[in-house]
Structure formats: C-alpha cells, structure tokens
Image 1 (spheres, one colour):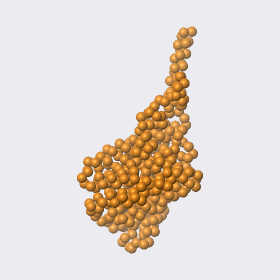
Image 2 (image 1 turned 180 degrees about the horizontal axis):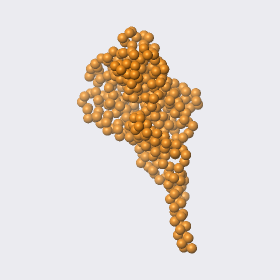
Image 3 (image 1 turned 45 degrees about the horizontal axis):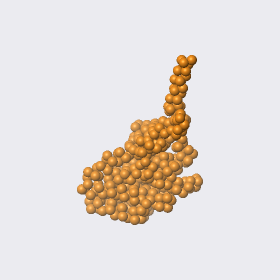
Image 4 (image 1 turned 90 degrees about the vertical axis):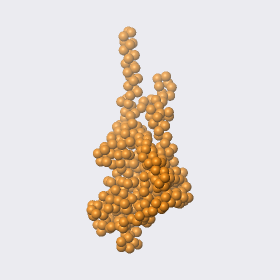
Length: 396
C-alpha cells in the first residue's frame, strides 16, 4: 500500500509538472504563429528582406508563442502569475513591452533616423517633397477602406498609417488610437516594409511607359552646410506649428538631424545613429513579435488589417507614380521627373529608393535614380509623421 501510495504520488507530481509544460498547452494557433515567425527569419536570412527588423520580430514571435500554463490558479487556489509572459505583469518582457505600449521606442528610433538622414536631396530639388506627400494617399485610402469595412474611426486611422510604410510611426499611432490592434498593425507594417521589393515593382511597371522609364533627371545641386543646419530648425517649427500632435516623432527626427549636420556634436550623432537605434530596434522588434500570442493575435480583425495593409501599400505606390506623371505635364523638357521614383514617396528608407534604382537600371544601365529617389523617400518620413499627427489630432 505504501508502495502504491509512493508511486501514486510520483505519478500525480508528473501530471502536475506536465500541466506546466508548453506541450500540454500547445494549440494549433501557436503552431501557425511559430511558422509565421520561422518564415520571417527565412525571408531575412535567405532573401535579405530587412533582416534588422524581421529577425528580431520573427524570433519574438517564437518567444511569444511558447504557451504558458492555461490555468489561472495554482494548486492552492491562489491566482497564478509565473511572471514570464509578455502580458503578465511583473515579467521582464512586460517591462520591455512598456516602451511599445506607451509609444516610447518610436521617437527614439526617429532620433536615430534623423541622425542617419541626409536631407540634401529635397533641399536641392524641393519639388520632390510633393512626390513624398502624394504617396501618403495610401494612408488615407486605407483609412477610408477600413471605415467601409466597419472599423471605428480611431481604429481605421491606426490601420491607415500602415500605408506610410513606417513601422515606428504605425506603432506610435496604434498605441494611442487602437492598442487592441497594436500587434497586428505593427507586424503588418514591418512585413510590408520588408516586402517593398516584391510589392512595388509590378505597380510601377503597370503605370509607366518605356519612354517615361528612360527619363534622365538633372544632377542635384550642391547644398551648403548652412542650408543643412537651418533645415531641421525651420522644418521643426513649420511642421509642428501646423501639426503639434506630431511633435514626439518630428521633434526627435529633426533633433537627430541637427546633431548630424551641426558638425559639433559628432559623438551624439554617432550614438543616436548607431548604438541607440540598434538597441531600441532590438527591443522593439523582439517585444512586438512576442506580443503576437495566438490567443491574442489570431482574430478575424487581424486578417482584415493585413489585407488593408497590402492595399495601402499599393495605393501609396499608385499615388506617388501617378502624381509624377501628372506633374510632368506641367514641366519643361529637361526638367521632367522619372516616374520610377514616385514609389519612393513612402517612408521605407532606403528600401523603396533602392527599388527605384533597380527598376531604372533594367531599362537604362547608366541611369542611376537612387540619389533622386532619396528625395521623396526622406520626404515620406516627414510626410508619414505629419499624417500621423493629423490623424491623432482628429481621432484621439
């Protein structure tokens, strides 16, 4: 009897132990999300699609979908909190996710982007700013489509910003307007940013003629150091007086750029554009990925957000390319813009500018469009932040 009692006790304890393992609590949803995480890692390593983003996010998805004990109480009947999951208060992941949930990480990334960005391209050819503005059509097109599908106005605004191809801006706005969709919006934004080389070229070819693809643009003029220093100062005052809600993003963007261009804060600029942005990218990517637990993420709304995200990218590319085609009707020969840089108006820097370069070289191997495309590309960074500020002002 004692032996049976002993083995019975061991068997009971093994049962308790198994109930704590992820094998017992594993679901089909977890399997699906783990496959998605592995796909992200594969695309990053094998295809080279934005590895600095997709590897942290992909691995975060794996972390987030190792299921934790489903029971909400321990054997004594007390509430159970193992303090390991991203949604469990007191866990390390939950503390790190605070920066996403409260919009702390995106402004820090914008600080680094500002310290990395050279705005000479739009200073030398200011009309390229209009191309960046036209590409924001994707944001408002997706906003209208989300409203039509029954999303609330604040939710539609958070979904629409995916069309700006700006992951940090999407996270910042979603954390303010639709935190319940934060994971889906963040994953959608970063996924489509990585897939820019696949999404944009077919739209660009469809909308342009061979003659338009061969247009050569004038070399950009040399921009003085004084212009580079004044630009972030006047850029901040102009944009933030118009859209004060964009101050957290635009303020950090222009501050980072002034650190770079002033010439006297090189150490600060190198820190912002190097170690700081790298650390924040790691934390943001990992925690955004970990937030996609199957029971939270796999909902019909998430599928709708992914579909709207794809549509918004297509609309944004359409808006940028078509604007250039129409704008060229009013420009003299020799001053025309190659429509293949219209796609670069989205904020995916420098991925969309590289797409312009690659597509242009297919038709003329000596026609380098990269420097021209960087103009609307960096304008798109400002444009998406301004659009986010507008949406936040009206919908918050």
